[in-house]
Image (tube, rainbow, N blue to C red; front, side, top):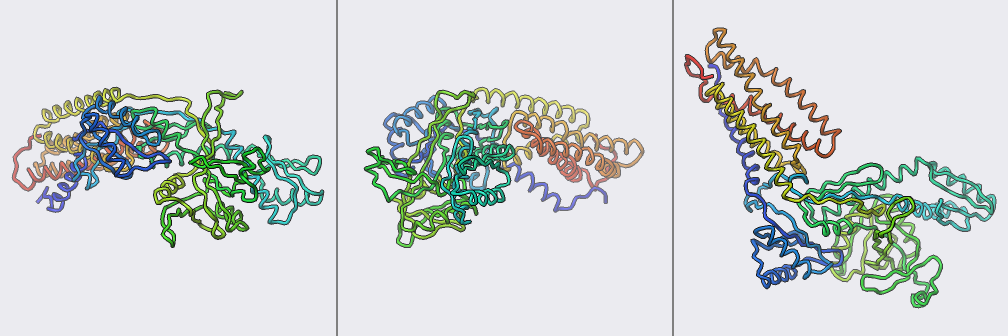
Length: 615
């Protein structure tokens, strides 16, 4: 008999709708005002820290919903924004500069739902509020650092090739190599040209060879600096617990950073400025650090203090920079002492192998380098940075390091090993950055956008419901149920997709799919009416109506889906937000309009003797 649906289809539809409703439900619980406390580079968050925070809040008579320690961060939930501000000011003064105390919004999802992976839709900056930064990469220092790497590469490669040279030094305009005689200059020039085809070589007087970068090499260096900084900044922000940041390139040397939900601009700056570089350098054991402190610093060495202010005399030559590190983890050595295991890329492995080959038993320092922006700018209106160096670890080289990785020992505690691993794992910036523009999007503006967007969805939804119920009667009520199911499925899928963010244009995409979702049912119902006008019975009309309209619906939706995919592929920011909700809405509307309504109609009218249809 026509229009009979097998049991498995009923179960499939019920299962899909139930799963969508389950994962859409976290959006009903809203968010709490929260304060997030995370440790800086020289601190840790422990149960003792948690107890201190609870005591400080209790003494100040600040009421909290909960105070929990999770993933090395403390999250404090409070009732309203006023309490949030008071609590943040208190904890900011109590915790000191070694901790990040930032205001945030935390989902109020029940624990049982969180255990199933249920989370509310992540809202973009235009809906949730937060901070927006435009950051500029210092390309001069990026090129200078690349030149510095060339100095080390030239020394190593010429030494391995057996070509004797006098000096290799870095100048403002490039790298200068001085040879011992004309023959070695010719050999060195031929060798370096072969290994570095993208560099320019110019012979000068006094057996000098000036090496500069070609325009193509300069462009590649600048492009790599921006791309690598974006990757490292994203890792650092994620490591520090900022949810769903947007970090993307803008122009040749600028990066846009958006942190939804972060209401404290000053703390957001600290999070971003925590990024820095790392170098591995040998301790100069042949000279006395006390003589260096008296002003007799040997050439090729410099004084660098550790975190406690203890001075060390380090060689200026960098064995390996932190941008070669792939991964790092903390563990214990065979004697139960803390250590950090480091994995590096092939180039970094070769550099570390050559650097440690003849230095077994000597101390090696891990140097943390931070570039702090100064108020003034240079003659090209570019930012000026002050270089600040600090030793975070000094360990003895136990064996020749290289290959896929090595380990750092000599650490004071397991927590220090964990902090160092975290820092190394997050990576090192190729060049320093400076914030050139900042904007704070208040939560009130975000709430206004949400309210207006919700009004558009509700009004559009209501008008479509009324039209369908009046014009198509009982069949219209079935379409209305499918339309409501479609909205639930869009919200549920958006909540399930990792990284999906709802923006204001995304809400426009949902409004658009409301009309598109019912359009398929209009086509089906009109075909059913045509079949009935041609004299076919109700069951035959239903069957022919769905079969005849299917190809038209499929063609129309596939072309729109292709457009949405293209928008997502080539668009940025708000365009991507619109295309995501549009694509999801197209898929769910086809399912609800064709499958869900067919199952319901077959369940209500299928297989029965009917004289007419309420359509």
